[in-house]
Length: 413
Image 1 (spheres, rainbow, N blue to C red):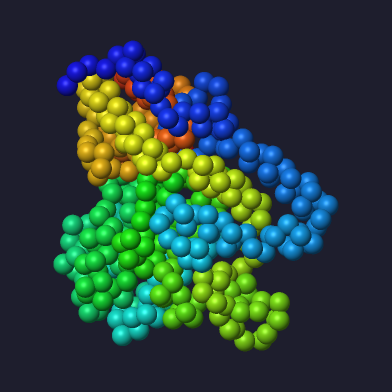
Image 2 (image 1 turned 45 degrees about the vertical axis):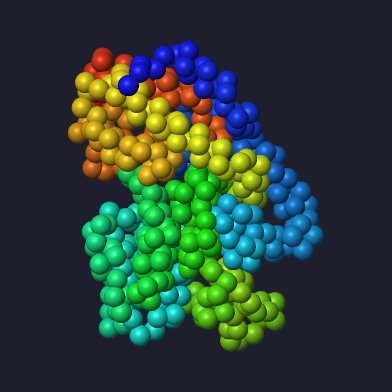
């Protein structure tokens, strides 16, 4: 493998067709931000948009804004925009609540669609909230529901006529492994099992074609690659063929057919509307919509090509410049099998990551030993990758990570 030099990095950045998006984000001086797979950077337009929502829409128009500024339709309006990023149609995505709550909604929907089945199936090592939600449902109705965890490579063989739902993450949060959505969905359907796909580490980072894969349900968060801000509203996809078959377990007032009729009993709203629950957080929706609008300006194929190249470059440079320090790849080496992140295992992973963060190279750590680096192609450059690995080499060469302050675990890793 040929050695990479600074001339190569400069050439790559000069030829980057989406490099101009970087100026649309707030990126602090002296920071190399490689954690957009956990919290995306602030779009500059979001500051002005949020200020307008607070000062004018809330401050001046007050409650009239539900009509005059169309607050009431924010969940469906933004949902229709996200639909374009995940390969579905208008009226199949709703924004609101958290990913965890939306997982609950989809699991209970599957239990209704398969009322004669009882197993909620997911994989070991999945993002915890997904597995926890299956446990919680099983605890509520232990005579009706069973949560089952199986090894990732044993999913298909565990699908049978007792399986009510299969819940999987499309891009794994630790390893970045991308699952074959079309093949797995087809195998599940052959067993009569609807699939819920967690797109939290896929949406906005890579092309997704839910309808092309005949997916049933999907969820995703708004604060990673969609750059919607901390705690941004999540989204739910429900294939149109399922929508009218489900009576929502979380039958909140805004999911009612006529919420302002204030009926004593619940009548589900039409289509995707019934998957709304409570009043949406409008400030959060405004920030998310700004991030989604920005994402829609970009060509997703170009973003995917760049994110793959950034990851490939990072892996090659770590091998080239840090190969003697015991880093073991924890992600697929082939870009087509990997999301927009790179992970390495190291026994001192936590301390090493804290030393990097102290130097302004921000990634994150996932227990027990994974250093995780996310690449947001809208604002990360090839120079970011070069400089991050240069800093990593210096941290390891000088043994800088081996300080007590870097080994003290913080609440958020």
